[in-house]
Image: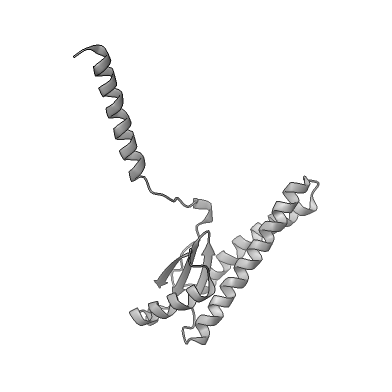
Length: 151
């Protein structure tokens, strides 16, 4: 075999292998700084962690708004604060809907495109999962992924 054919086959094989590797990579990765500590039976602690993270982010945005940063940075901070408020309102709305449906003690958190609902271990059943999913999808966009956990 001549040099050109050997080089072509080698490069073609390399491109083919790299393509197969790229296709098998996961589509989405979630940044680690957005992860919330999971509940280990201490519900008050879990809620405190979630509220503290949101409050820290809003305080950071408020500092940006109050500082001498550029107008664009201030606009971004204001926009982010309004999104955080919308998320908190949406979480409260879903929690209230779950409580009205006799699924009390559920925690709801929305991170990126994932709505995570953590319910009581005693309520674990297929029927309750269906109820929770139905209620959540009535309150959020269909593009969001819904996770239901019982702890």
